[in-house]
Each structure stands twice: as structure tokens, then as C-alpha cells.
Length: 107
Image 1 (tube, rainbow, N blue to C red):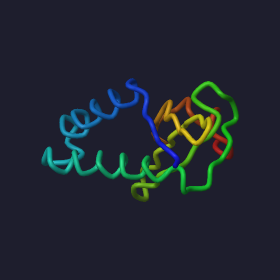
Image 2: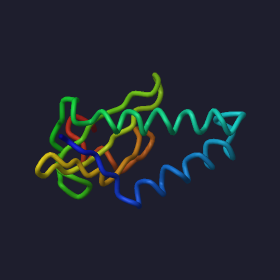
Image 3: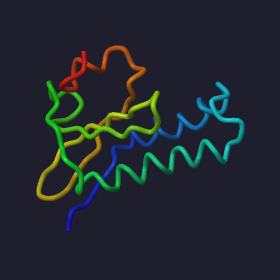
């Protein structure tokens, strides 16, 4: 059976995301922020069933999947795979300026 693990640094970043979303008023309620986070975690859990794409460089992982949350935000989850274990090593979104150099097809 395939398994998905997430590095503690990625979990920490996602936990901080809740505070950022609420403080920057992307969502008016904390529950909405946590629902947003749950959707990201639920997507991460499906990675073994998704089509994987190779990254340009291995700095953040050898593979990635894209989670399009809405028309404005796409999350890029990078990971490595060994013996059926997926290790999520990084996550960012299309609003990050330096990340496209690591993801194929992005400029």
C-alpha cells in the first residue's frame, strides 16, 4: 500500500498559512481558513493516484502535482517517491516568484 508522508517543515508552513489567510483577510472566518487547509491536505493524500510530473531541478523534490484551488491559485506540491512511500518535501503556489524555475512548463 502506498503511503504519503509530509515533512515537518511543510506542515509548519501550512499551519502558518491559516494565520496568513486570516490576518490578510483572504477569509473572514477561521473556519474557512481551516477548510481551505483541509482541502490542501485532502489533495496531498491523493498524490499516489495522480499523474506525476518531473520537476526541472531536484531542489524541492523529483516530482510534483498541481492542485488548482480556484481560477487564481494553483498549489505545487513537490515530493520524492521510494518503495511506495511519497514524501512531500515542499509546497508553494503560483504567486511565488522564484518557483517556476523548478516546475516544468512554467516561465
